[in-house]
Image (cartoon, rainbow, N blue to C red; front, side):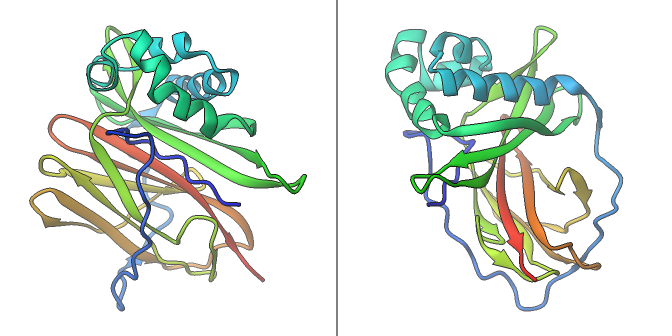
Length: 241
């Protein structure tokens, strides 16, 4: 069983993730790019606290970690949230284990990105890798989880896929206004992936690493931003032997 936990919340918690084919000729990607923004432990720790609260079924703590625009869009108060979106998040993280911070970066004075990785217990008494990422908005001196109105889809490699040692890395962002930038990390390391605005309300990053990626499990994080909001998505894949 494969799960993808979506960071964008619109009418429901998760959107359908469609894996695209991408272009035939891909731009070479530098996996040693300079990290955008600056190191900041708070975004990653906030995401970890949010996930741990979801696993415990603690809607009140989750609500306290949400940004004000997110509260307005999925609330409008704690009670509606606890009966709606929070229950979807409870279900998504019920079997999440071994959570740790994968990525924690302050990108500018408004936005940060945080991601955690861990394991999902399966029905077969086994576990599978998992990753979850969100954008965080700076409010009143703290980073708050943003879940409003931006979808990241067409993830490449597809989640839980077995890929080659030079996999296609990419995603598409869909929003209600212009997508202004997209960023990508592989295993917490920034990758310089070309960004293209493909329509007024969509943007895409796509490329292939110049160097080979080692065998085993890997995690991708993508961040996207518009003038008004931002979002992030994380997923895992495997490089076979």
